Length: 295
Image (cartoon, rainbow, N blue to C red; front, side):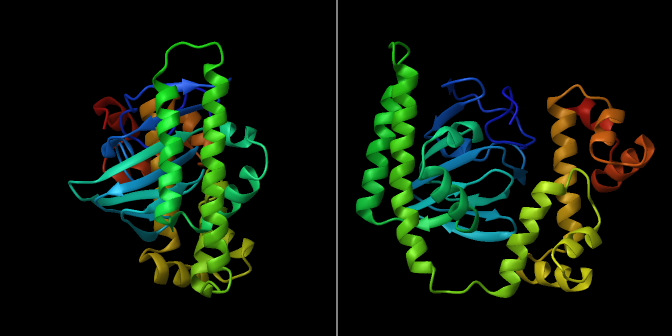
């Protein structure tokens, strides 16, 4: 993640107006109590960091890598870097505590956070917490919120980081229990293939837009893999590849001053004209028009 980037990653919307706290170079977090800050701007988007959400009241739907999850009171959401996230709507009474963290911050935590959370959250972004577990998570959030509001203190950053670590350890307990419950249930083949595809897509979308590339890496034929992904998500592999690439183009056009040539080269287009044609085909406007209109 770039130090000046949005904690929410590649969302093409306006940056959050909530205060962010720095606890080191490129190592930041922010707290959000108002529901609209969890998904601001345009969706879908790809995350650069982590988002932890504790649902207290109301409900909402999110799609993570093409799979729909219901978020209700007592559920915990943990979204990870490079996941494709879509917001499916929320009830008017939604109340949620949210913590957004840079990847660098989480990687600085001692084990077992980096082992437990990074591996399990990718396959289980939404889990159910018991009333006792939710109470414990909320207590740590409130401590963190109080420290977050403090503008002074010699050890302010160290205390904030320690409280975040404690909060994530409590989350580890939830995931360890949930993983033990789910370990006896084998994931359906199409669902596993879809998960594996999105992991590959998050790593290679800047250079590879061919269905054949992803199918080859997964030892499947393009037809077989595309069919499996479509049965789970309702969309083809080609659709998902284009979706992610267009999101990245929009992000760069809106949040950087890179030229069309620079963006097209970074995303492995054969020429700027091919890049412009590709973007216009998927959005109905040229990159220059999109940047000028500030959509």
